[in-house]
Image (cartoon, rainbow, N blue to C red; front, side, top):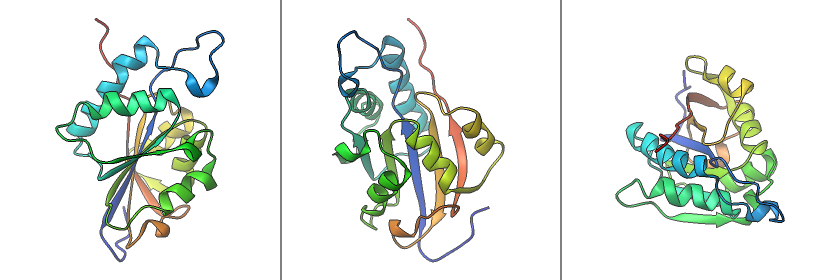
Length: 179
């Protein structure tokens, strides 16, 4: 369970970009989504609606595949929240990711982070002191493309989110249907 601390219940929703393509001669940062990614990203957006996890703010890597994931996922919502494109989320490690999260305004109660592995998986494993069901074991096994991990904790500001202080409440891997 989540220890009741000061401040509101906050949620960090971590979304790994959808499946990307590997076009020859295209730099990694510029790789677009593959056809499967173009199906899975909207499914991720729908999954966030169904789980009542729409964010107040999104932080998104500037890599093409992450931006496309954000665009396709957020297109499933009535009015998408503000998004901040963050170059430092590309190839970020846990300290970089935590620095970006800690910089978020305390008014934001649900934050969506759209980025890459291995950083996102390591962030989830670092922050989760415990999980509901087998969610933590699932992340340890694999955090695939389009995976969504939801971390919850109580705090007055995002700077209070530190290793082991959050509860991993769910792990979702949405997949779009082939046409």
